[in-house]
Image 1 (cartoon, rainbow, N blue to C red):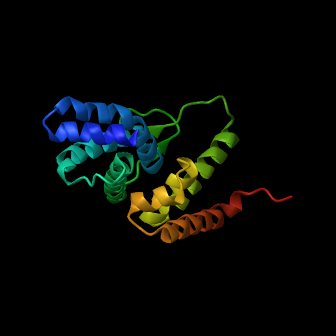
Image 2 (image 1 turned 45 degrees about the horizontal axis):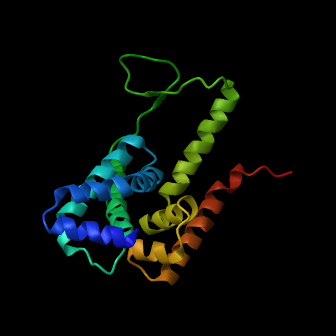
Amino acid sequence: MGNDDHALIRAVLAGDKDAYGMLVVRHSQSVFRVAFRITEDEADAEEVVQEAFLRGYRKLEGFDARSNFRTWIYRIAMNCALDILNKRKSQTAVPIAEEYDGDQVAVQLADGAAGPDRLLLSQEIEARRYAAMEKLTPTERLAFVLRHMEDRSTEEIATALGIAPNSAKQAVFRAVQKLRQSLAPLWVKS
């Protein structure tokens, strides 16, 4: 696939605009998956995909032909996702509403046929998981997502993040340790 990508890149640089569309089709699904796992929001992930491929198109002349296009576009997408996360942090949180109120700006949770105690527990687990991920540095978060959610190798993570393989391995390790520590109270001990 890498050689096909390079051929398409050469075609784009030679003036074939449709060739970039083929790159988008080929890689947009995996870029969306990574973006969604980082942002945890479908609309944000779609925005990341659009912005990443737009930035990629604009910077395509600077693409190093020795590199892998997928890794390169992942790196751009991760930067876009981090931009969205930073924007999100600056905005206020939306409260969760128990019932629909047309005047109130809030998220209403759907009834999944679970009882109130189960819903409360699920909300608490989700809130703690989200808070635990927020405590990670951007490098740790991205390394964790790529390793444990995208099943990428240490070398791929290092290339995507622009760090040494040993640093990538350490970032994944630190992320796992921090998440274990943050989520330890949720483990049932018998």
